[in-house]
Each structure stands twice: as structure tokens, then as C-alpha cells.
Length: 257
Image 1: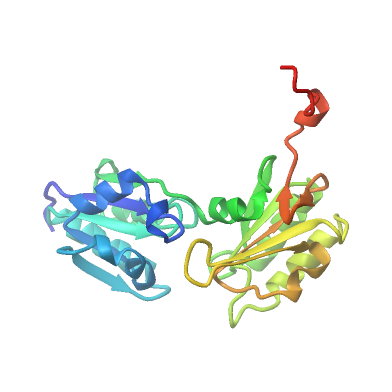
Image 2: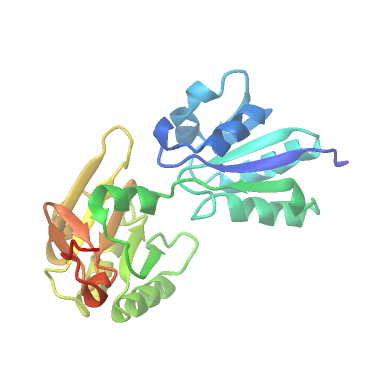
């Protein structure tokens, strides 16, 4: 296949609501000839895709979508590959680069367009839980061995990071979140604040503020982000806040400044 002057725009579409789609993402979709994506994500932005050639497919078809995008770009088309959240956070960005490199297509013809990640969206609905150092860990062992995931959980919990869990549970993966809770509980009090956000900024959105001991009393699935606070994280007025440390350096009640 001979290469033409095509381009791939890997677009993070944010959590799914149109108001959280960036201006640059809208521009990228407008200038694209073809839009490639998981069918659910294509559906979230369908009103922006009139007149576009659409290539959509189901779960676990990521490699096929990346290959199709590269093939179309090598024919001279401008191709938007869409990811929910941010394309560079558990998204399509890395895979598109890998496929392009494998076929010898220039990586300079790929542009990554950032979006509001699922962790940012969930955190905003819970309050301000990510104000200090945090670790983000996917519990899906489809591509990463569970032993390695468990090691990462152990280290993050021991180091007192706020922990954000992606892909916490599916119909076939039910025990990983239970084991994750067990690992973190070894290092943190059961009253440590925890939050669960399902379908952030989409239809069916649910927000739960609870604690480490009780977080599995609530609905947790593939559309959930689970957040576990650190030793300083607190709750008030139904929100989760992790202090940055300003209270140790400044008088926050001082109104003379």
C-alpha cells in the first residue's frame, strides 16, 4: 500500500456529554473524513458526525480499529479515532502509534487530542479527592497479569497514594475488586473515604460517597470509577476532599490577606 498525505487524529471525547468535549476535539471531528470508534462512543457524539464515513465496532476490537484507521490514513484520508475520556489514558493513542510503527507509517502524521479523563470527571463529581499524589490502576487482567496488578495495589496502598481504580468489575471479573479492597485495607483504616461514580456525565449517572469498608455494598461495574482516599482524605457536606497541605503552612481562616 502506498502512503498518501493522510492523517490520524486520536480524539479524547471526554466523559460523553457534549459540554465536556473540547473545542479542539470538535474541530478535529469536523475536519475528519472518517470517524473510527467503539460503537457506544460513536453514539455519544452522533450529532457531530453528520456526513462522515463511520467505522464502528464492539468491545475488544481495538486492534482492528487501529489498523483500519492506519489503512485509511495511508490512502490519504483524515481519520478521527475516538476514545472516551482522554485517548492517552487507557485509550487508543498508544495502540495507534504501535500499529503505525509496525507498518512503517510516519508517527508525525498522528495527532493526539486530549480530553477530560474518566478519573477527572469522577473526581469532580466527588469533590476534590485528587489534590495530592495519586495512583491510577486498572483492575482488568485481560492485558496485564493479576499478580502484577496486585503488586501495584500493594505498593500504592503502602505509599499512601490516593488510589483510582479503572475497570473494577465485569460480569466475568468479580473477585478483583474484592481482593483490591482487601489489599488496601491492610494499610488503611476502614473509615477511609471512598467514592464510586457510575457513568459520569452520562445517562444513568450515580455518585456514592462511602468508606473503604463499605464500598462494595454499592453497585460497581465496568462503567464505574472507584476512588479510595489516603490517610489525610476527609469528607464533609457529602464530598470527598484530600488536603494539599495548605493548612499546615497558612491560616486558612485569615481574612486579612
